[in-house]
Image 1: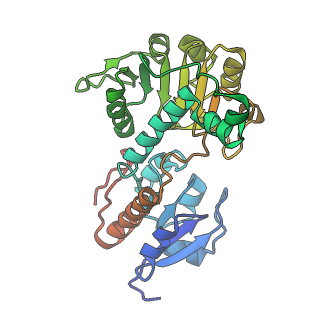
Image 2 (image 1 turned 90 degrees about the vertical axis):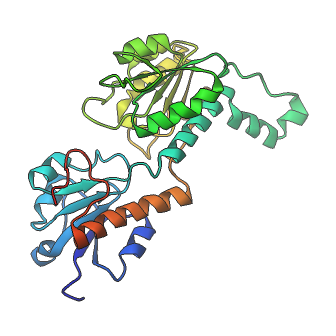
Image 3 (image 1 turned 180 degrees about the vertical axis):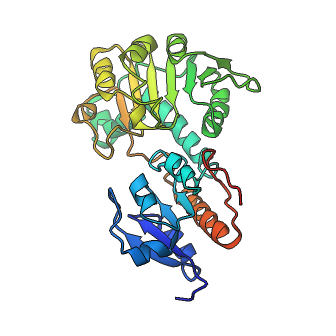
Length: 320
């Protein structure tokens, strides 16, 4: 290895395109992910950057005395201890914008599929039941005339809202503060929005403030005609409360792309006819994941070569 090449640590698995982009430009050190790194002091001292799809806690950060940047593969970066990174002057980056369209498209598809039970209808046809038993049962719900509330109105939330407009639904949102430039109804609290709408879409990140905030009270407020869609983080949902609401008819239906302890999904969800389940695939297309990988690589290489990070998170602004 040339002395001019910086060393980048990749803990656990990451999109192969990231490694392809690094090849020949930096020294790549791979290591198993875990609670703390198992690296020699010599190797740890060489590492200036981390490219990660997962978590980086304070112990990893403290084990790397010359670490300068952590590039996270994904918009959500709750797995990275950004507060500790900031205290060390380490930049953290994520991959915003490049997946906005894909996640928004998937959200609309998940909503329609949940309301109209399209997966169940296709399964009915494939199993020969249409010919044997007659038409598939009418879907109990429709998107027609609905009021949709978005919990979260960042970049992805706004793309979802734009896609909802042609469906002629009323659109509202709840965030910590009102976005006066947006033409949608603002609700000062999550409960107020749940009481006013009959579709609630969660797109908030996983934080201490959002942990299990979608609970029995919110699902009851949404009501028996209500539909809950989650493409944000599973940690925002009290899954026991959600299961009970769906089982008891307190809540009408749910479409979930994320789960509290994924990839583990509670067995009770699998037997419910009013639930649509996806294995966290909202951004999972080849073009979008390639774009995310490129942004991870560009953040790392840009920082190491010119001390320029394209997408630093707000907690760790670049000072150069």
